[in-house]
Structures are given as C-alpha cells and as structure tokens.
Amino acid sequence: MKVNKIIVISILVFLILAVQCKEKPTENSPEKYDTKAMVTNVATNYIIPAYSNYKDETVTLLDLMNAFTSSPSELNLTNCQNQWKETALAWQNVAMLEFGPAEGMSLKAQTNIFPVDTTLIKSNIASNTYNLQLPSNFDAKGLQSLDYLLFLPAMTHAEIVTYYINTTNAKIYLTSVATELNTNATSVFNDWNTTYKTSFINTIESNAVGTSVSNMINALSLHFEAFVRKGKVGIPLGIFNGISQQTMPGHVEGLYSGNSIDLAVQTMQSIKDYLNGKTFNSSTNGEGLSDYLDFVKAQNNGQNLSVVIDDKIDLISTNLNALSPTINDAIINNNTAVHTVYQSMQQLVPLIKIDMTSNLGVLISYQDSDGD
Picture (cartoon, rainbow, N blue to C red):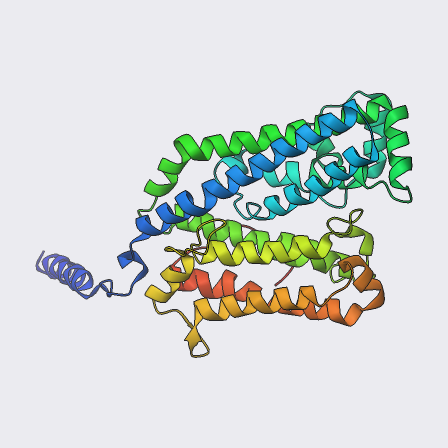
C-alpha cells in the first residue's frame, strides 16, 4: 500500500511539474499574432474584390461571345480574343484560392485545365450532346478550351469566322463554355461575399488543418508547386517526363493565343500581392502572411523570410520576362533560359512549403508525388 502511495504521489508531482514547465507562448509566437485582423484584411481587400473582378470579366466575355455568335465577324472575333486574355489574367488572381467555395466545386479543374483535349472538343461539337459538368469534360471546357476555339491553329481570322458561320454547333459550344465560366465564377463570389467570409474570418482558433491560415498556406503552396512550377513550366520543359526528359512545348497554358508568359507573370504578381495583404488593384498594403512571418521573426540565412520570398518571386518574374515570344517557343529555341525559370521556381517551393509552414505552425495537408 505504501509503495502504491509513493507511486501515485510521484506521478502527481511529475504531472504538476510538466504543466508548470510547459513552454509558454512568447511575445512573438504565432498564437500571439492578430490573425483575425490579417484574415479580415485579406478576405475583404483582396479575395472578394479579386473574385468580383474575375466574375465581371466572365460577364464581359459572355456578352462578347453572344455578340460574336449572333453576328460572326472579324471585329467581333477580335473582341472575344482580347477579352479572353483579360479573363484569363483575372483568373490568375484567384487561382491560388482553392479552398472553401472554390474547393467545394473544384473550380480550378473546371476553369483552367491544360493542355485541353481538342479531340474531345471536336467530338462534343460534332455530336452537340455533352454535359460540361461531368469530370470527363473538364479538359474540354474552361478558359483553355476557349483559347483553342477562339485562336484555331493554322487559321486566319477570316477562316475562323467562316468556320463559325458554317458550324452552328461550334457557336453553341462557345456560349455554353462561356456561360458555365460565368456561372461558376458568380457562385464562388456570392458564397464568399455572403456566408463564407464570416466563417473564414472566425476560423482562427489555431493554425491547425482546416483553419483559415492553414487553408490559405496549403492552397497557395499546392497551387505554386503543382500548377505553376510544374504545370506552367516543368511539364512542358520535360522535367517530369521520366528519364527521357522529353520536352512537351504543346502543354503550355495559353498555347493557341501565345499568352503563356503574360499569364505566368500575372500569377507571380498575384501571389506576391496576396502574401503581402495588398488591396486588390491598389497600392495599399494591409496585414498579410508576410506580416505574420515578420511578427514571428521568421528568418532565412539571416534575412527576413518575407523579404527572401518577395525577392524570389521578383526573380521568377524577371526570368519569365526574359523569355520570348512564348514559353513553348523558348523551350524549343532557348531551352537554357526556361531551365533558369524552373530553377528559380524550384527555389521558392521550400520557402513556402517548409520555411513558412514551420514558422507559422502549419501542417502541409496535401500529398505531393514529385519527391520534392
């Protein structure tokens, strides 16, 4: 009995000491930061305005598509082509936000898969029987299907117009794809602008999986690693094409319009603005993830991690702008320069995926099969 009492007392003493010795949050611990102010700023001044802008661009695109299909002409075609680029650029501003309403409807997969399946597009047009909401049609719709349909390869503007004059089903397909882009954009914007904003701002009790900060960082990390570094550059460059490393320049974004560089540069600027809590389409900066990193004194080789990340993003943009006239053309004619772009992108991955997450106490919750 006496021995048992000693054991019980020893356990109690150990537990008391453990509680007393438990590390208390320091003034610069992640949990001491005003997370609510940060997510409120990002939601109010970046996310919702960026979604609103993308939605508005899809409205304009749909209007111009209707004008073109009602009266096919070279002028109306050019208007659609120009607006396609504006809509695709607007998409880059929200593409990293695949959580909440966007994740719920797989917005990215429904909006911007590339390369598109041109064979399936042609089959859908020929049959005029398709359901664009089925996953089997995801790579035959969205922005990149319109990139193909509005910039039909090896055709002049006059020939494209003639094609649509003579192909009623193609006109129907154009407006069907544009309508769905607008419907999806409107749905996500409305969800953010009504109920989800409140949920997002209030889910800040920690940085555990499923909380707002975790969702922001996981979605950003996945977007950059898999869809920017790999999708926009790595796959076309052949980095992920097995031992052969055979290039696939036809796999770039904006292949038919020739806008691959502009879209990639806009992506990098959007990521930078988002991290810095910048007000959308404004020079005003509020609280963002970069401020959170500064608060916890996150460092990388003696420099503020936020500065290192900004500098790396700027370097990537500089390297992208050095390519000409498109990423696919540069892969063929200036392969070394595209490798330079990829290497600078690769250097950004651990800064976000490892350094940022470890400093803010966020767990990466997605699976990556690249071995990076």
